[in-house]
Image 1: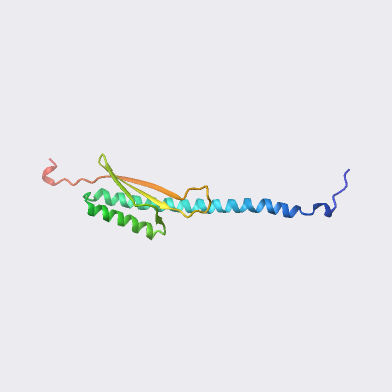
Image 2: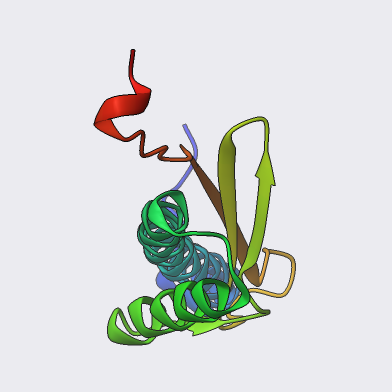
Length: 134
């Protein structure tokens, strides 16, 4: 049988465990916070892109309506507490409009992304007069 170790032999063990464990716990905490911020930014970008796509689908595709759509996307992002990384992109293709929004994310963890991009598309609304429907 071996004799129980005396308390004097465990000197420094607690400090070594602390030195090894604290960075791991802090890393997990920071990654979790960054993931939550990314999730929030993704939701904000989705809401703003959907709002822009709804407006673009019902607009007449003029430069004035493009300005109004971009302003509405900016306002939506600001109201939800985020910041645009670049201007919202609007494009039309095959009877659909697409709005792409890029949201800046504060950099908490260096290797995780600092931009969230979301796009939304909607069919362009066509208004047909009653006499033209036949």
